[in-house]
Length: 249
Ligand SMILES: [Zn+2]
Image (cartoon, rainbow, N blue to C red):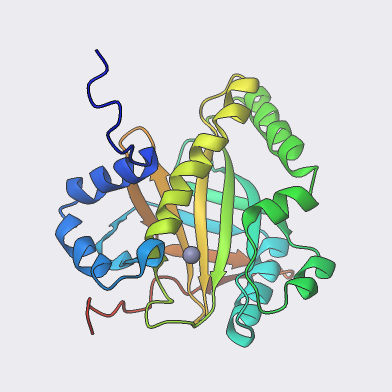
């Protein structure tokens, strides 16, 4: 029997996401945002997402510098720029240290003009990215001090709508997909502790890190973001200060 064979198949990520909304009791609110007709761009207000317990992001000086450039680009141009960072947790804690940054090369950035580009562009331009991540996993396996390898998929949100300063439904969908996509890297080196993070740089200067915990199927935001300067001092990055307008306003 093949009952329901012709039933319309729902995107499996869409189903996962809907479960997350229901679990957090925000499915009604999300539905109200969806009624505005933004589709995949439906805003998911960061205000209703849980905070990562003791979550902290520390950016090495090169990552801090690059992220500042990202903030400037996001303020000045209407381009959505993707980037990737590689790092690791501090032992077995929720503190993450990033020290490796990749983004689109200048040539394709200028070719893109006012257009957006996606993370595939970054992955395509840096063939060393995936081997570097696997190398990191192997290094940590040798060190065996509880630290996990982290790969972060980021993009920028220029001020193009009233909701520019928060994640979209599609962003959340992507974060779950990125986590699945590194599953291969995880299994090829026999380590399932490697994890992904999402990052969104908004035109107001917010740097918003988001974690999808596949073990409990839920999202968590990192509020504390700091960067190391070349002189060794640490400076704070602003995060989640944007106030998401209520639906229909
Ligand atoms: Zn986005």
